[in-house]
Amino acid sequence: MKKYDAIVIGAGQAGPPLAEKLTQNGLHTAIIERNLFGGTCVNVGCIPTKTLVGSARVAQLARRSEEFGITTGEVKVDMKRVKARMDQVRGDSNRGVTAWLKGMDNLDIIQGHASFVGKRQIEVNGELLQADKVFINVGSRARVPDIPGLENISYFTNSNMLEVDFVPDHLVIIGGSYIGLEFAQIYRRFGSEVTVVEMSDRLIPRDDEDVTTAVQQILENEGIRFELAARCVSFDKHSQGVEVTVSCEDKPRSVVGSHLLLAVGRVPNTDDLGLETAGIELDARGLIPVDDQLRTTAPGVWAIGEVNGRGAFTHTTYNDFEIVAANLFSEDQRRVSDRIECYGLFIDPPLGRVGMTEMAARAAGHKLLVGKRPMSRVGRAKEFGETQGFIKVVVDADTDKILGATILGLNGDEAIHCIIDVMNADLAYTAIQRAVHIHPTVSELIPTVLGDLKLVG
Image (tube, one colour):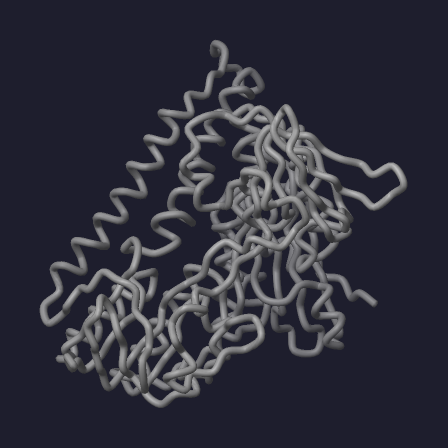
């Protein structure tokens, strides 16, 4: 049995920086990866999908060019070149992570499938490894639900959708949340007909209803169609590709498309790790419960990233690494519970979110001050012809602390950081409201919104 000071299982967002920190502190470390270095984000997530978002945005701007006084010819999308660009970007990222790992001293890189065979004992490629510290960073994969007829048809998930080098005639997307909506706009802008099928009564139901309504309107303005409250979904082959039944009525409604994309959530990659042999508990969803320092129920074992259920984003995974590293090496008792949730929906215009929604704040019993301004009153948005969306901030009326905010509109995913930083500093809303921001920007309207807060019932 080969012994290490530390083993990192998974080379996703948190794995490589953690390996570097461990080796820099003198720990002989192994990192085990069964697929691609860089994990989901680099290879089949954030990096490639946002590269597609970039190409789709250029196509849309080209179509709108006459609004800005610019005349162009017919807009054509060459999907082979679009894919080649995406492959180059994600390939560069993958190669960068690989070179980074290979350049680390005191690190063994092992490619293969790791499984626990005992307490902090791991088998990979027929070899037994043991370590004082083990870090599980195995991420998640696309959920494939048990829907009638699915076994008889072809379909894509978010991963293999990235291998497509053509424009589908009619893409039907199952799932009206973040992944589904981003792909919907991407392929609509590339030229596909797109229908989104969502089982809930509205899109992204975790967000406030005004956000849901605005996002749907933005996408409908581009020609994307929606089938909501589709609670009897089933599939069948069709001469044009696939038929999706979306209702339970006497005469059920259906949608016929050329291709199908499943975007109905993620499942953690914990089912084949042998965790039970190591005393590592799982919850009903296959997630690994952790404490505030990300320690599992087994001594000497940590779980970081999507598998711990404490965040499902690249930025929360990286923050998990920072929390673990601070507690191990810096005598800095950082905690997951100190983290304020923030995330983005990268349609165009994007959605930036932080903290509680208005809906959640009301349910928690807060006395609320709310400020809201449409993007049509933002100078930068008007100048760039991007006036869809709004800015909304929710404040606790008793403490003057910001509880949450939404910026749906031009640069919303960037402007939201003004509020994220003040919330993390635990300052009153006046810290932004009295600040002078640069004109003309989206951020300059945040103080104006906060200067017009109103008490809501």
